[in-house]
Structures are given as structure tokens and as C-alpha cells.
Image (tube, rainbow, N blue to C red; front, side, top):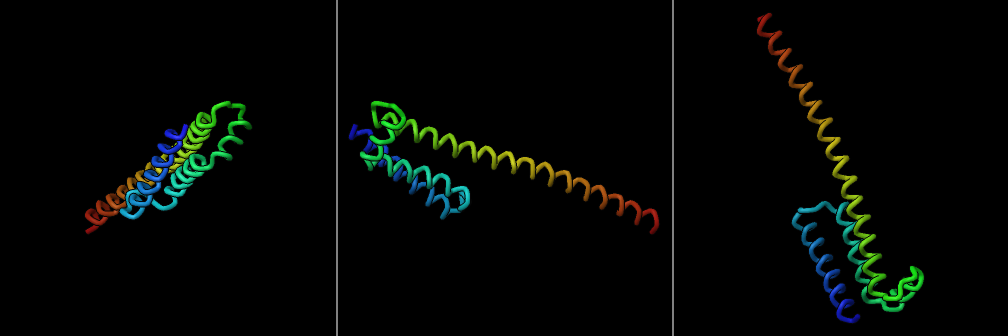
Length: 120
């Protein structure tokens, strides 16, 4: 059990460092990094607090506390991925709307250009 908890501690610390480095290098925006940092810190707290982990396992009705931790962390990361999917969907919709607006502007510019050539 200790090996698993130590591994998850290392994994959560690596995730925190990775997210912070990504924010610093502008690979990820700050507002999107918050959910990843929250997930990594939750993993860190669960992997270091044996009493909290045992209480959570008892509450969930799971005999093995590390299994409860993995279940909770898996659910947490699913929520983060769902949030990312929502953001991507919003961006795709905004991209489509922007492309349509650009096409309309190009049409108007072309119409104005043709009109000026006919009159001039």
C-alpha cells in the first residue's frame, strides 16, 4: 500500500510541476490549469492523508483504501476531461461563427470592390 501511495504522491507532484511549467511557457492558459492543479492537489492530499483515505474508503464501502483513492481520482479526472470537452466544444462553435462572419465580410468587400469598378 505504501508503494502505491508513494507512487501517486510522485505522480501528483509531477503533474503539478508539469502544469506550472506549461502555464509559464504559455502552453496552457491559467484558467484551464486550475482544474488540473486542483485534481493534482486532491491526488496529493489523498495519497498523503491515510486517515482521510480510510474514512473515504469506509464511506464508499470499499475495503481497500488505495482502491478508493484510485476510484475518486479517476472520477475527478473524468470531470476535468468533461470540462475540457465542454471548452473545446465552445471553441469549435465560436470558430464556426467567426468563419461565417469573415465569409460575410469578404462577400461585402468583394461586392463593394465590384461596385466601385463598375462606377469608376
